[in-house]
Length: 119
Image: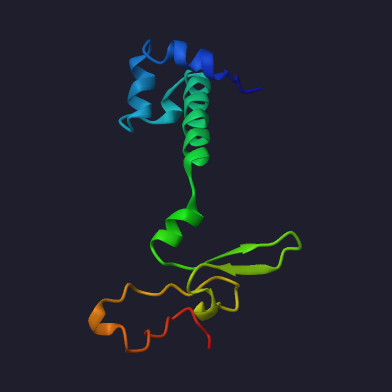
C-alpha cells in the first residue's frame, strides 16, 4: 500500500532530500524516488494543487476577458454565462466554439467559422 504523508510531514521533509527537490523542480523523474520520497512528492503536489484550485476563479477571469462560458446546472443541463452568452455557439459535443480575439478593425466583420462547429 502506498505511503501517504500529511502537509506538516511534507513541509518537514521539504528541505531534507535533494532528490525530492530535483523531482519537484522537474529535473529528475518521480519514478526514481523510493516509496517514502514518492509519498512526500505526492503530498507536496497535493498541497500545491489544493492551493491553486482554491485561488482559481474562472468566472471572474472570463468576465474580465469578456468571454462566455458554459457549466452544468444542478440538473446537468448546459448553462451559458457571460456577457456574450446570447451569442455563444455550442458544438454538438456541448462545447463552446472558441472565438478568436477581435480587434477594432474586425469588430463589424463576422467571426470565422470553427472547424469544430458542425453548423
